Structures are given as C-alpha cells and as structure tokens.
Length: 197
Image 1 (cartoon, rainbow, N blue to C red):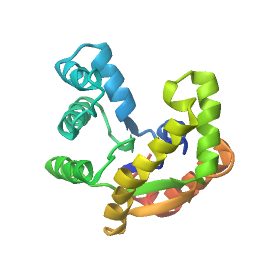
Image 2 (image 1 turned 180 degrees about the horizontal axis):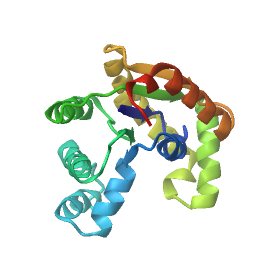
Image 3 (image 1 turned 30 degrees about the vertical axis):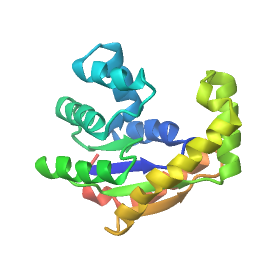
Image 4 (image 1 turned 180 degrees about the vertical axis):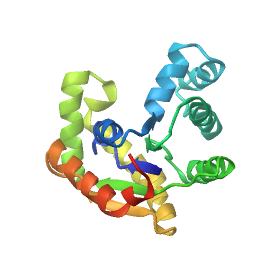
C-alpha cells in the first residue's frame, strides 16, 4: 500500500500528474477540488455548509474540508493506497490528517513536492486561463497573490513532513511526460516494495 501527498503550488501540475499516477499504480485519487464539486453538485449537508462560506467570499473552515475527506475515505476503495491532491493546505489540516489516518491504522508514505520556478508557474496559469476561462487564472495580479498565500500558508506543510523524513522534492520543470517519468522512477525506486500491484 502506498499513500502519497502530491504537493506543489498552483500551476505545478499536481492534478495532471495525480491522474496519471492513479492509473499507473491503481490507487485512489482524493482531490479537494473534486470533493468540493461533488458535495456542492449533490447538495449534501457538507456541500451546503461549504457553500454558505463560499457565498460570503470566506474560506471554507478546515473542519468542513476534513469532514469531506473523512467521508470520501470511508466510502472510497483504496485497496492499493491513495494519492492526495490539494490537501493538506496548512499545518492544522496536516495534523488532522495524521489523526484521521491513525484511526484507520494508516500512514503517509511520502509527500512528493513538485518544484517549479515562479515565472514558469505564472506562465502556466495564464495559459491555462486562456483555455479554462477560470477567473483566477487570467489575472497575473491574482495569480501572484495566490502564490504568495501558498508560500505563507502551505509551504510549512512541506517542512512538517520533512521533519518526519517523508518529504521529497521532485523537479516539476519540463514536459508532462518527463515529470511523470521522474515521479515514477522515484516511486518505483523508494516505495513500491511496500505494496504489490
């Protein structure tokens, strides 16, 4: 069993690489974005609660996000393990994740951090914005603010796992295939002895 956190700033390619890793290693994919969309579109109690904060332009509290993850973990099959994408975003979420996994007798195998230059991130997000039309991807000022928030709030998560000797930096520059190959080499070299697939 392999339980990974795919980590990196907006535009680092987490979602793209997570999808490929899920297919290759037959592991579950738990993305906070997907969880939010599911809960909101199905008008669940958690979705309505999250929406009440979002409608006011407020951040959804950690406990709501953690409840969504807990629900997903309990309903989804993760026979060979899982990959988390977009979670944890801060130390409180990382600690809550530890508690949640302990209850299920599980632990994180590794946090893989995609390292990408800031100017490259900005270019990637602006290009994505041209295709997706996402409001937060078409304005460079907003993108820079998002990257600043990431540095302040989310970067400490890397240090949290580094202290446990679980964090590994991966070069996130290059083509999608090159980055995927580097991730697979790392996983196969260090972690696949822990499970059979």
